[in-house]
Structure formats: structure tokens, C-alpha cells
Image (cartoon, rainbow over all chains, first blue to last red; front, side, top):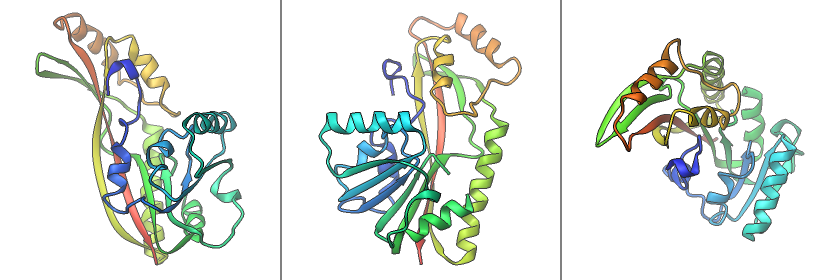
Length: 102
Length: 139
């Protein structure tokens, strides 16, 4: 990570590589809790089957949706909310990812 | 936190994986000046409020395993580094972190400034952070 792209988070690909030490995200249905502006979501979503990414912060979700359109990724649903308020449609996910949010 | 983990478990198929990525509880952010292949440690940042949260997260992850709804699949820690061109960028860097933000210990910021003043041309400030990944498999 260089100072020209100042960030307090790890560089691109660092976290997905650690996650994939335990589980491959390829063709998986992922629930991401605390996705923020989608910084991490966009790193793994191209490999996933589908992603539901939630965060209670509206401006962050707005930014994530803007970025999603710019990147042309159609397999992500960004939603304002928390795990406590998510409707319960069964157990449809292969992976639940708490990204810096627990 | 336990409630959030239990709730997340209800959305996972049997055998599905719950992953938690968060800052490491005991490996504090370390500030150093790097120049010409040398690394001069300056200080470590403090965040007592956040450390309480991280301890609670550790306990919550242990609890859902003890309850039997998850099995521990593994834990992995890692460090990552960011580099700043000058001390004035520390403020911006810290503001990028979600509150509660870490802070310098007493005298730490002055030590950084003093060491920077005597650092050779081309030196940079290294911030070494850490994270831990827990993987729990839903039973």
C-alpha cells in the first residue's frame, strides 16, 4: 500500500486470500454483514454466485451502489440494514462474512 | 454480538461458513520510520475503548462454538502495512478508521516528529496494522 492511495485497510486481494484459506468464495452465495461502501465486496464478488451485502449506513450503501453500477456487477444486492432486521427466508447462504463489523 | 452471530447462523446452510475479519486484539498498530532498508520503531497506538469491543467479539465467537451451533474451522492472523509520506498525513490516516479511533500514547506524536526531523531524505512512515480471521462452520 503506497501513500498515494492512503487507506487504513489492507491492499486489494489481501482479505479474500485470507478468507479463501478456509473457504472458496467461487460460485458461493455470500451474505456480507457490515459491507460499508463495498470496498471488500468488490474484491470477491466477481467470483461469487451472488452477494447480499448489508450495512446500516445509508451514505455508504449509496456509494456502494454507485460503484456497483460503474463496475457493471449484477450479482450484488446492496441493502441498508442490519443482521437483526433482515427478513428470514430460510438458510440460503453458503458464507456469512462479518467484514470488520463484529 | 452473540445475537448477531446466532442470527447469521440462521441464514447459513448446514456446513456453511461464518467468517469474521476484524483487527487483532493484542497486536497494536505500530508506527515506524523506514529509510534505506532500515526500520526505526517509533511507537504503538492505543485504543482502549476498541480493545474492549474486540475482547467481546472474541468471547462471542467462543460462545457460539461452546453452544454447539458452530464448529471452529480455524483462526489466522496477519499484518499489513500502509506508508505515509510525512507526519501530517497521520491525521488523515487516523480519520479513515471507523471510530473509536486509535491514538498516540503520551509523547508518541512528539517522538514521531522528532525522529522524522532527523530522518534521511526519502524516508517514509510505516503503519503496521493487524487483523484476525475466524472461520466457524455451521453444524
